[in-house]
Length: 242
Ligand code: ZN
Image 1 (spheres, helix red, strand yellow):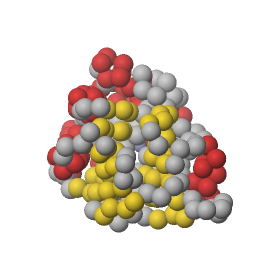
Image 2: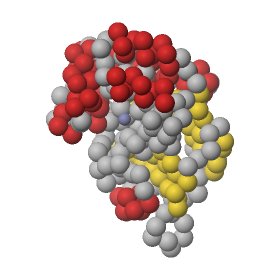
Image 3: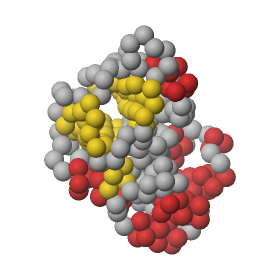
Image 4: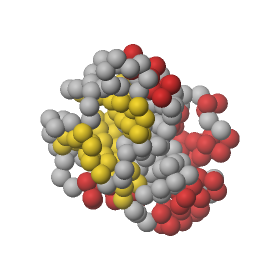
């Protein structure tokens, strides 16, 4: 089965559409959370996501905060003001969707969480120490995470306690060895200095991870954000990818 794996769409419709267009035909879509937050099209992104076939979606910290299930004090002031806008913008159907997603899923050989197996919606897996600790919190061969917006692959080999850490090469396929924690990067707000939308296609039989980046019309999204009075920092960062 070929699965489109993506995360952190963040209400960026143009980026999401570009990903779906180049991903082509897949058997399923696994979204690792944060469908909303930051961007100008939260309802449109929720609608487009749940129109796809065989969709499984996790609940991210922004999704939880946007529907009032996570206190806004875990966000910085800009993220908080943007969050207020999202809360106002969301319609009843989107709220219902975002309220009913799981924080952890086990699908075949893969554990899915938004942030980390230890703290499914809040921990940032940015280094080998944090990732290493988290291998004790899931049993499957593979764990897919989002949240940091940075594509990264942690692999634990043999008896070693500390995993290796690699930044995957865009538009390049690797084969996942047991056990791995891997992040496909962010669709709507990359933070690895590459503004292109990120995603991966995972083959559940061959265990291949085809990691891709795709350009989209950033200026169009920025114009919509400006028109809605969203924070300047969030408008600028989608162009710099940082
Ligand atoms: Zn996010």
